[in-house]
Image 1: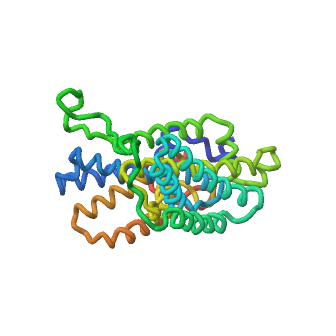
Image 2 (image 1 turned 180 degrees about the vertical axis):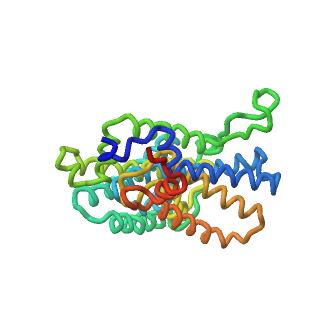
Image 3 (image 1 turned 90 degrees about the horizontal axis):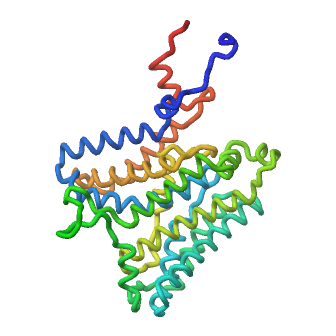
Length: 353
């Protein structure tokens, strides 16, 4: 049979080594080690805490974006949804509503945007690029109108609670706390991202919903013919993307202690870049929770490394763009395999028996 079936199923180790997130992780570790050697302050607990806090909102949104991209779609509205959610929650706080009411109304406004996206993409059949591009403009405009183009910062009696939610750290450092100073105090944004990533990773690996999700991205018509509720699952994907953007917005609202309608502006491009670098295919059918997180971390470490190295921050876009192109190139299919897998096979050919 080996003459007729030359290929065999990969082992777990082979699947890991041939995956894009694995090589992005290797590149991330190499970059961290290089920068730590060149700039000792790069590896300090303070800088680690800053880096993890900075990329956590992008990691949260990348989890939602990964779900959408797996279906073969795209969500360009996540940055604007962040701005709208922050303004809506901020308004209710300035009106002296309890923090949980303000957060709930803000979250609802974000989910409503996701539901609109999902309805027009899944049930009307419009291209996701067009629908979410329209929502990008609508949500941002609503944020400007609702805020009267003003910053909101007088959050009333629950302001300390809101700030505590966004500015919380663990582990704590102090005379009464167990953590030594070389362990960074990681932010609430980071821990929220970790918990959600574990949940999404479990869903991706052990649920029928995820199998349906990947089936839609692989071949939507075939999935529909096999009884997969394609429209409903695509609808849920856009609602979940809006949920992650709303969650990130509320955490940033607490961290900043203020709400501005420009929150999240341009974030959608960085989130898409993170998911693509992490191994999600823009053609659909591929993506992981780990890839979303590691792609977000990789972009933030590059940004931080450029600043530490004294390179003009205007070069950041050039580096990010180059890595997007490289990531898509590595993920392109050739002869049923990605270019990365094909290159590894060429470098390490199997011995003929």
